[in-house]
Structures are given as structure tokens and as C-alpha cells.
Amino acid sequence: MVGVNPYIAFRGNCREAVEFYKTALGAEEIFAQTYGDSPMAEMGKPDAIMHCTIKIGDSSVMMCDDFHTENFSTGGNISLAIGLNDVEKAKTMFANLSDGGDVTMPLDKTFWAEAFGMLTDKFGINWMINCDAPHEADKTATA
Image: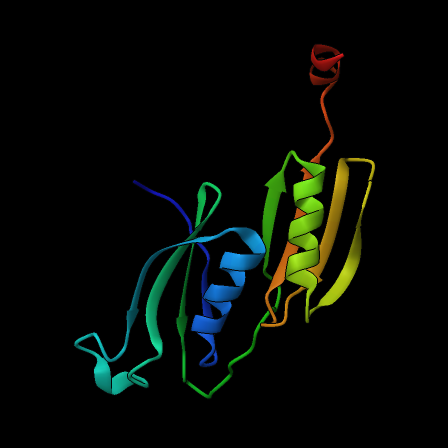
């Protein structure tokens, strides 16, 4: 199977981020292995995450602890975008992710969405939350 999954490197707080995303987004931890539990134990702290996969909805996000000091930065020009069709769930996820972070664009109605907002979470990860506007067919089906 061919696909693209985001892979996020953290500065020693990957386990904290995993627990945060499990609470904030309802993420499910699929797999996690520490450096200490791997053949690469000498490459990191024994309890640091060498590789972890979480599932958010139908998508997987991979992550690890990275202790390389050269040119390490977070954020940059990448944002993780969550697409929803439930405004209340979008509001909850946005509020949860923004706890301890910085809101770039408050979650609000736009010309393309019932709710859209952008933020950087407390780990320096950029997020976009987009809740689709209902289609005309959907509106008449529920009326």
C-alpha cells in the first residue's frame, strides 16, 4: 500500500505528546517502542520513544523522540489538518489542542466551512481544524 503519513520528531517529550493527543483528539496508540526496548538502545535515553504510531480518526501519525541538537526546529511550513463534519467536535478538538498553545486563527465560520481555525499546540505542532459546511442535499435530507 502506498501512502503518506506525517512523522513528528519531539525533543524528549514524545510520551507527553502522545498522552496529550489521546486526551485532546481521542487518538489511539497503535504501537510504541522505546530506545531501551530496541536493538538501538545506545542511540537514545532508555525510556525515550524510538517510534510510535497513533491513529486519529482514519489517519495515522508517527512520532519519536529525536535528540539530535543540530538544526532542530518545530512547526515550520507544515500543518496537520483535521477534517470533520461535526461542529461541536471541531470546537472540542480546537479547545483541547489550543490548551497551552497559541491560536493563530480562532475557530469560526468561513465562506468555505462551518468552522475553521488554526493553532500551534504546546509542542510547537501546527494544526488546522476544518469542519465542512453542510451540502444542500444534506440540509434537505434532514429537514
